[in-house]
Image (cartoon, rainbow, N blue to C red; front, top):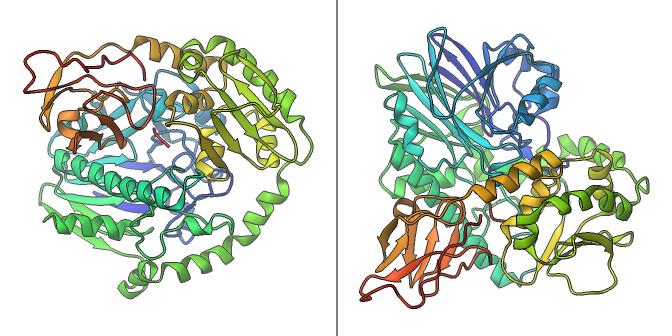
Amino acid sequence: MKITFLGHAGLYLETRHGSVLCDPWFNPAYLCSWFPFPANDHIDPARIANPDFLYVSHQHHDHYDPQFLVKHVSKKTRVLMPDYPLKRFRSALEDCGFRHFIDTRNNEPTEIDGLRVMIMALGSPADGPSGDSGLVVDDGRTIVFDQNDSHPMNVTDAKRLGHINGHFLQFSGAIWYPFVYNFPPDVKQALAKKKRIDQQERAYRFLEDVGADHVFPCAGPPCFLDEDLFGLNDFENDPANTFCDQTVFLETMRQKGRHNGHLMVPGTAIELDGAANTCAITHPFPQDEIEKIFSDKRGYLERYQVRQHSLIEAFHNALPKDEVDILSSIKERFEPLLASADTMCRNIKARVLIDCAPKDQVVVDFVRRTVYPWNGERCKYKFVVEPALIEDLLVRRCEDWVNELFLSCRFRAERDGPYNEYLYSFFKCLTPERMQYAESYFAAQLQDDEMCELGGYRVQRRCPHQAADLQRFGRVENGVLTCLMHGWRFDLATGRCLTAETHKIKAEKIDAPGPAADTVSREPEVKAG
C-alpha cells in the first residue's frame, strides 16, 4: 500500500483495490486562523483529484475543506460515510456536489470491491458538529488505522480487521485552552505545561493499545500566520505550548523505548507492506531542508506568513461591518433554542456575556432563558469578541460557533469558576435539530456502577465526562485522578471535579470498612477548553 501524506490529517491511500482520499485540508480554517503545518501548497491537487473513495472523518474545517472538495475532487467518487446519528454531514457533502455514498455501520467491517473498511464513529455532542471518526483500511496485504484526531473509547476495536501495520494519530493540541483565558501568567503556563504532557500521554496510550508496526504522528499541529495569533506557534519547543510538532512526540516515543515512529511532511510517500513487514519512506525534499523546517521554525513560518499575507488581509476586509444588529439577531436566534434546552440550561444556570464593545454587549441568561443588553450585572462567563466576527457568524447563520469562532482563538474569555461542558455544547448546537439531538443524548446517559481500583481508591470505571475507561486512561497523583483522554481531573477524597463543576465521580478509599462517608454519586450528566 502506498500512502502519501497530504498534511495535517490528510492521506491518499493507493491500495490493491482502489484509492482512498482522507481528510484533504488545503485552505485556512476557523476564520482564517489555522493553516496546515508544514505547508502543503506544493502538492498538485490533480494528483489526488480522482480517488475511488473519499473519507472525511468529521465536519471540523481542518478535516472538512468544502472549498477544496468542490473545486478539486471528482464528484464520481464514492463517499465513505460514518454512522452518525444526524445526517447533517451527508447533507453538507451533497452540497459539495457528491452523490454516491456508501453508508457504514459503526465498528462493523464493510467490503467494497475487495477492499475492507471499518469506520469507528463517535456520536457525543462533545466530539464535533456531527461527531468524529477513525478509519481502518485493509487491502488483504496491509492494514492501516487512520485515527486522525478522534478519541475512541475502545481504541482496540481498530484491530477487528487484524494486526495494524500503520497507525496515524494525533499527538498535539487543537483547542483554545488555556491561551484565550485571562488567567495570571504563571497559572496559564502551569495549565499549558500539564495539558502538553497529558495530550502526549494520551497519544502514547493509544499507540500502546493499537500496537501497530509503524506509528505516524499527524493531525497537528496547525500554525497561526495572522500577526494577531502568530505568538501561539511553538517556535522553540516551549514546554508550556500545547501546539508541539511531530519531532516532539517522536522524541517522547524514543524516550519510552519505542523506535517505530516516523516523521512525515506534506508529500512524504510511504510504501507499507504488511505481509512483508517492510516500510520505505521517501520525502519530497532533501533531508537538510526537512530538518530546517523544525530547527528554524520561526524563519520557516515567517516566510510562510509572507506568502499568505494577501489571503489573510482579504479575510479581514471581507468581514461585515455594521451590517447586523447583534443584540436583536442573537435574541431571535438563541431564545427559541434556550426554550428547548432544558438539560443545558439546568447545568449552565448562569449568565453569559458576549462582549462586542464598542458595539453591543449581550447577555445570554440560561436561568431566565432570555437574551438582553448588558447592564453591568455579574456574569459568570464572558467572551470578548470583535464585533465583525460575531456579525459574520450571524450573517452566515453559522450552526456551530465552536467550529468557527472558538477554535479560531480569535477571542478572549473569563470565567468565575470551573469550565462548563454544557456551555460549549450549547454553542455547537445552534439549530433546533442539533439541540434536540444533544438534549436527547444527555438525557439518555445512564448511571455506570462498574468500579475499578486506582491509587488506593475504588473509583467508577467510566469517566463522567465522556465515559473513557479510567482503568486504562486514569492516573492518580496525590489523591487527584486525571483522565488522560481529555485531561479532566477529580479530587478522589470528595468526588469533586476540578475541571468542571457539573461532573462528579464516585470514589471511596479501599481501606474503608464500608462506603466512604464522602462518596459522591455521579449525576447522569455529561472537550474541555
